Length: 484
Ligand SMILES: *Cc1c(COP(=O)(O)O)cnc(C)c1O
Image 1: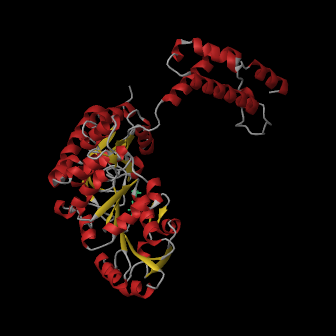
Image 2: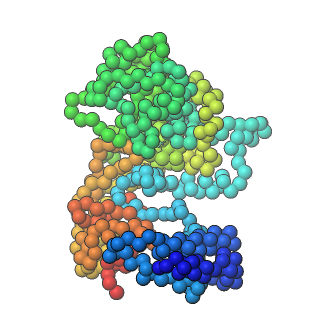
């Protein structure tokens, strides 16, 4: 293309106002706010301008470069342009945060939103958020109240702790507790517990941000009480134990129990804190899962502070829960950081309703989705798998090899690092497209179905598939695999 061609084409590009005028008269744009139409018109025209300029760029001697044949007749293309603007506008208006179907079997999938809230929590969010509430108001006296009081009694009842405070998330809880109890002092941690939780939460970094001085003791696989003892000096402000949530060291290992650490703390007059990460109020060993330390155990061991997450094994909303001794919690409440990390009323409403269910463990297991998915019996999983298997077979016929396969699912969310839950999955080997293409098409489908690939098979794990989603999965598979 010569430079005068380029010039001609650029000149032929209609102005923003001209296109905007057409769009606004077009009934297809009636539901789109003007600001969105303006932005999308600008963007579309700019895109065309760039295309014309790119087509006129220095020609490389490359047989694949066929840009000169790519003639854009912008003048006659106003209708195409409008269609483009309409598509762009609608895309801009569609929500970014959308539901997906989790067929991965990972119950606490951090990327897919971790814990699903129970109905009680959802209903209470509506009740509280729709109206004014006594969030920080004492109805009895008409005086100002404290926000955490909605849940602190309940938390103490359920955990055996003296006092509690809740913040935005557990990372915040750890930061806040460290900063309150141990700023400018030395905090002793075992080398085996200097973990990274994912994202940017690493114990050494949080320690630094909270103003504490990290003192590592022991080795990666073995740490003894004498390691802590030898490290204690007049600058020591805290003994910290971190639950190594997402990994497990096996073989020749040794760790100091919280109880032993508390005894040492008492002897040396140094507070002890445990970051449980995924704290649980239920003894999962009763349900055939590996025993995880319960919050109750940690509190009973005598730790001054225990922190845990609201949306991991607890199965509630994103929150950081700090429980412990009265004076330690009182100091935390006084810290200005607490205001910066404060929990909002919707979370508080959801947390209160979720925790309330724990007063009756059977109810909690039935009603809290995380607990339900973790404790579902293998028999029930097989029934779910069978249902989905039959639906899929009915819908897709012989365009793929579909089988049932006994596999394992992972709890996720940094809980039960070594635990694999027996499950029965549906495996699909398509004959019309590749497995990776199938995985992608399911993900990009209207129902956004997230499965996984293992051994060149597409895998659907029924554990995390919610009731009612089965027909959607079967029909989406059919749309993708069955040629019409
Ligand atoms: C998950 C986890 C955290 C962070 O908790 P969030 O609720 O994700 O902020 C901190 N410590 C441990 C040990 C964890 O497992």
